[in-house]
Length: 352
Image (cartoon, rainbow, N blue to C red):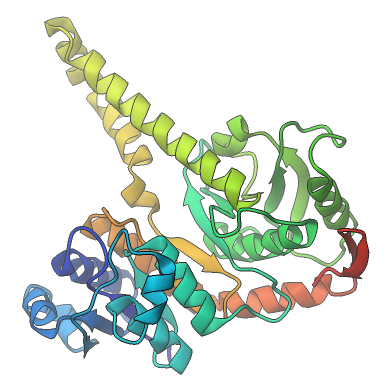
């Protein structure tokens, strides 16, 4: 099988072209059959490629000097989609010149460009932003939506569940990922009308490659008891930032505690293997790569501050989704859901 190449926005992100190219080079060691379209300033990309011989024959450069600013409004960025490195990377997916795009640039601009250029898949009303979060279990948990849609109805939540489960099957290898809806309690009567409707539809659906396990509270997201957590973008973004803040709090607290006295420093040396494992587990670079699910093409968002290792993980996500044909999996699952009836906002319609 000839794999489609991956377009990398080499100008996006805080760390510059060198980090983006180095990350792509690291990822290619794991996926050596992939080729790359590197979008950005040609002279800077060529200089970065000098340190990575494995990328030279596998890369084509699309020259572009214009960059989307980190604080630029999505509407402004859209007007320059055909001249910026981000817009050209996404445009390559639309034109069929690449199967996936990876960018560490402005999240709002990337979502806006991706939605306009690629459109949503048949049966999907809105794309969702999904990311992997660490857990105490054997596998990471996928959470969506993380900010693409501040308000969602039951139909959207059901579609997010289908997309998240398809993604989870690729990441975890589970044939029927455990899916839960984020709620203020686990009791069946808790939550909004939208959550109740979505839960009812998922319980009644047959033939889907997922196991719906009801509701989950925010403090259980990282326990490893489920594979996919589904929520609206407003709640999901708040939950994600709370989790990231708690992780930083724990690491900063440990750092402060271990440097407070001579005895504490000695204790740090004794417990260093455990603290290093904790640091590795909580490092966002090791879970980098959020995906815009539901589009006619794969788009992956890297943290703006990601290291080369973090960028490599984002590119790795794009490669795995292409290798495992994510969009085809979602299409097949939506077909299974097609016969389920769903009442939304007082009107009865198809769930997919």
